[in-house]
Image (tube, one colour):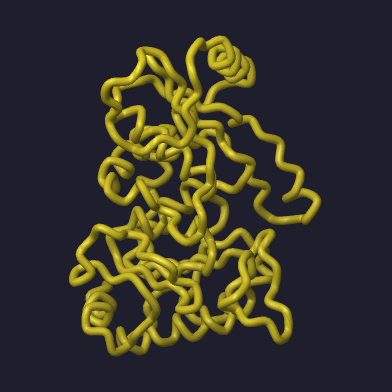
Length: 297
């Protein structure tokens, strides 16, 4: 029997989920066991940069084990005799040798983050929920979904420098003015002060402008995976440009997804009917988006 291995990259949750869910889909399609490596990472960057969120991913998934068991898993993979086939296509394998390791660890290029996953979207969602730690599921049961969920990615993203073109840079914070304008426009379309939930890895002092708006709540105190899944359940999502955390919430979402117009490279939910699923910049004149916003209660 072959073995499917996901080696988690040294990255944030959004980037880690790409190889993790690809490996999970591939293992499911071929009915092979999945081993996840590198889950006990030590990330010193968030401490050195004094970020609020330290990216400690514990008690998020059922596969997470003790350091000792993780070490045993690594030895098991090292002792496995067979070729290592990296980043295979997500499909059932036919007519291959009996024993091989199918290895996933790559973070995809920003031009097509969900390539290979889109055609398996329903399966990805199903497998993800089955992988969740029971504590995560229990926590989500007691948290109502937001009417409007806004993700403001800060952390190690830098501020836009004077004179820079936001459309031509990456790993840069989406300007506060954008979020203020989007929230106000959504409320104008709806005709009321819709409640807004802010999801962010930043400090409260960095969110002062947005939090000063009426009926805006900062969602703090939850683990990253709880925040991501809770954000995905929002009736409408406003994403941060370039944030894979935002994009994963959108990929899992059943609602409209608002993306910054300067950073739209490819549809995130590629195979869904665009006549029923809105995804794109905030366009007040778009009939589907307007309809969806007015339906929010």
